[in-house]
Amino acid sequence: MVLRVREEVIAAQMLLWPDKVRSADSLVASAPEPRRQELQMARTLTTSLSEGFQLDEQHDHYRAALDDVVTAKFAGQEPPACPLKRQSGRWWT
Image 1: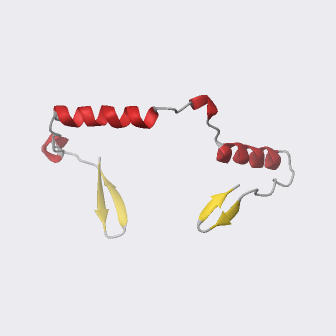
Image 2 (image 1 turned 120 degrees about the vertical axis):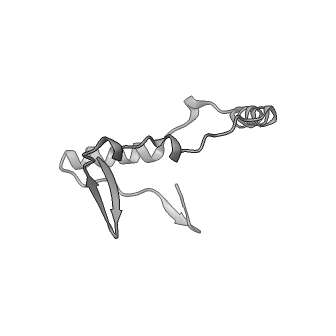
């Protein structure tokens, strides 16, 4: 089966003959091997960004608020109000 785009529609078409099926290897360009300097730069960046980061100190406020809303809705209650205020295009607590 192949997906073809026709104007604003994606159509699925069955391929009935083996000569219509081609390998996708020719469609994907192979990536070059990274140079030693690039690997060292990636290690340095990863190390500098991970210094001082403690996963157990992180808290997903959005997930906690969403869990409160889902729990309230499931219980047939009014969901809690949003405690966030929008200031200059960003959301703050």
